[in-house]
Length: 320
Ligand code: TXA
Ligand code: MG
Image (cartoon, rainbow, N blue to C red; front, side, top):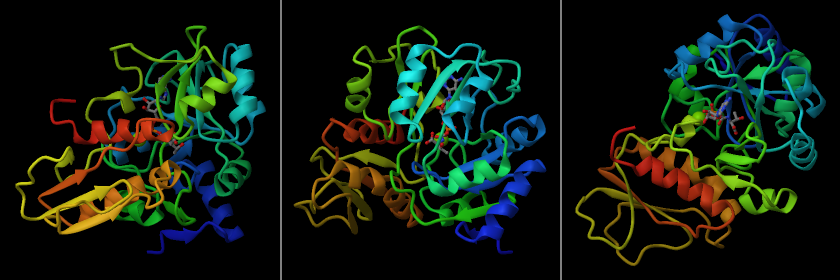
């Protein structure tokens, strides 16, 4: 059906923008992961996102904007901290949660009084947002709870039938979702660790804290999320019982040869490279129906913290 089209052809970008304006769904690349976009000001269009993803209605969406200046249009207050963080990190992998005004329909925010805003830096996302001329609500373009897509083909294989167009632009360069920071309590609180590291935020905002709230504010915070269909286990040198298992290593091959397939996130031990490869390697291994995927822990510093967060949630065996 030719739903996947090159994002680098002007006519395809125009077509995508038209679809958004008319209330359709477009999957598009961002620097973090591929998003499933709809016009954020059109509640019916936004409602389709929830249906296609089978996303619970209590899980609010991020609104994507072409420019930082636009953010002020949709919020009640624009605190000094918002100015500081947006100046430092927009366009880029930062999402800010602020009190919303009445322009943002409540379906976008799952009824919350706050809205999550982000200005992506990917040139295709930028061009699409400019061309569409509307804010675009977009979660990661995967079925709810599963691995986020970093390539257009993954979107096509999972939810492709239900979207109107998929803009293709290769691999998302960062590979992990944006970092979500709430500014509603006065102090900045990280609700979800992501492509922007705690260290980078601390440089601008030393008072930043990772939220300790047990109530779920960000369903990326659900204990089980980013999951594979194949059971995922953290490798701690334990005995591997499965005869048909795969291994996702950080930087080198495991000493044992029991694994049917090994993928190495970053032979040069570069967390940035590991983050970029993480979801796509996991997705590839998941497709092959191994009995289990064992994942080696990565150092919990910088981007490693966000990778470990994904690994822990994807391997969590308890409920939600
Ligand atoms: O990198 C990204 O953030 C990607 C790309 C497409 O921009 N989007 C993404 O969206 O990861 P999604 O829906 O998969 O994750 C958005 C996260 C969820 O955990 C959601 O609960 C949280 O942001 N969120 C959205 N609005 C919120 C709000 N008002 N308060 C607290 N958390 C919010
Ligand atoms: Mg997601």
